[in-house]
Amino acid sequence: MIDEAQPKKAPATGEAQAGQQVFVVDDDDAQRDSLVWLLESHGHRVAPYACAGDFLAAWNETLTGCLMLDVRMPGMNGLELFDELARRHSVLPVVFITGHGDVPMAVSVLKKGAVDFIEKPFAAEDMLRLLDSCLAREREEREHRRDAADTARRLAQLTVREREVLDLIIVGKLNKQIADVLGISIKTVEVHRARVMEKMGASSLAALIRQIVSAGAQS
Image 1: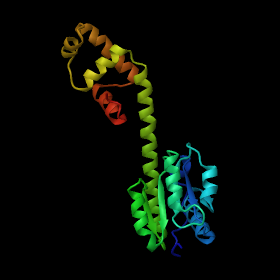
Image 2: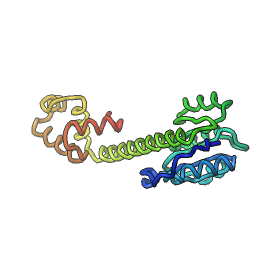
Image 3: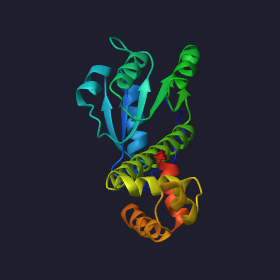
Image 4: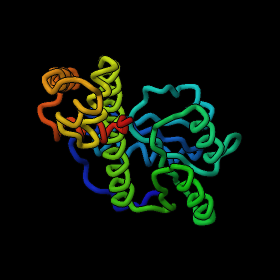
């Protein structure tokens, strides 16, 4: 259960405004209701579920936010749900709610990609702090995936020659060196380089390199 010393109600947070939700899967009605009250009183949008099956029925790849998942539940337990979500390639971050005896199991799922775990009974402040961190991480990772997809889309628009020029730019080749490697004139390199910058939407060489490296798209 949650400690009785609850923080005062806060206004809606950026997480709620950004469309993120906190998905709570816990078969303990009192525990689940208490957690839902705490999170909603601090501006979070909460979707509670009494069992893993109900959550799986509602799950889809567009969900954003964080999953608060109890370890011990009848039927499919939290660990089994976590594994099933992994098989479905879910990117929803998971925080386990665990009893003292479940800590070794919770530690094991951290190695599989869970964000963290919190041990019962927990203080409201600890839960909120952990949740804020989880939601911030989810936003950052979602933004990274969006940027990577945009970079991949832009790369697909490059011609074969433009991609060759880009690859040589990324490894630090100067225009003259690129011209020598590709057997073309410096003027032609400059034209291809300008088109690469335009198609990639990069305002500078430094921005272009950051874009490619950050997206993991360097060939």
